[in-house]
Length: 383
Image (tube, rainbow, N blue to C red; front, side, top):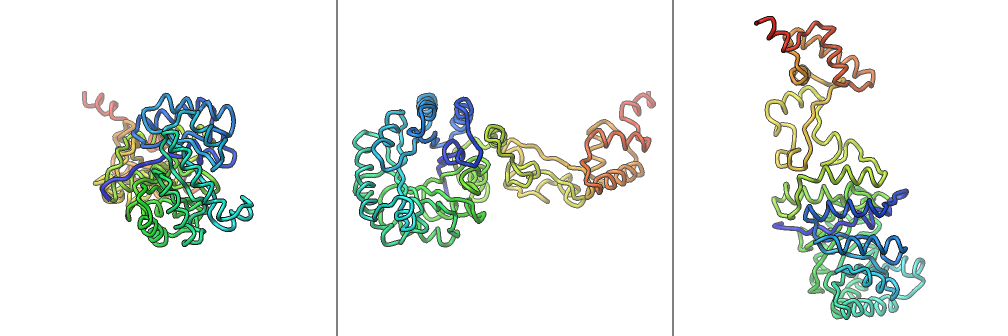
């Protein structure tokens, strides 16, 4: 995997997280950071949804240098709203699985193909880039899916997005599906994976491995139900594990994550890969001692906190060892003896065992109670 493009859908699918609603200013701020980081496509929203949504999409399209996409159903009004908003790419979607065609659209397979082709032709005639999504592709009859793909390819779509709408694919199966699709179109392939079984990022990477050029992702993995493939996980996997190039400024990933968590109202779990508070934190004595000596001992090595704009932390608690306590005491200006380090460590462990967070203030109190002198006091004595 030499390279991969990033299509961010935080402002569209991410906003569909239950209870999440981005304001006009929220969308502008997030889009600005995504743009500055080098994100290839920003899906700004669903223009036909409301006047406020239309204005936000139009503003993002006019104020960012990257490609902006607007979502639309295979409906004339949706497509016109997207085109009028000034986006460079119109992302159209329609259900292709029988369960959704029959019970959600109340249509037929033939209608889906006809409306798909007409919509692609309408977008191309307007001079915009067209991305076509056969929604619920991973639960669609494969022979019919290929018929649809061949029809929209002939109609001139630029991109075909293969979505795992309900998150039911596995990496092996998704890889095979993308390979089959590639044999039936000359359009560029994009993938969109949901995280119902925790496989979204793995599925997105599997698609890229066999020839898809771009993945749709959202910051902090927010989105419908369990969310989407995570922006930060996908980018860092391509950059670090595959040693590929996304063109993204990864040093702003933590900043971006914090802004999205605040604006979305969806807190980031401590154990969230790449951006969680625990991603580069160490409490266990063995791990902390190793990391103090060489961070590669108990971290990936190919991904450092500096690469994502984060900091390594030695956390104090029940599992803390003397190496970590000594480092923290030195950081806050103490000059402990070995015996004092052991005494303070015992206090830290006991306090942490009560499920209480050990703060710097607690550490300083434990040090003072143990009679540990501060470094400037030692200097005064020597003078």
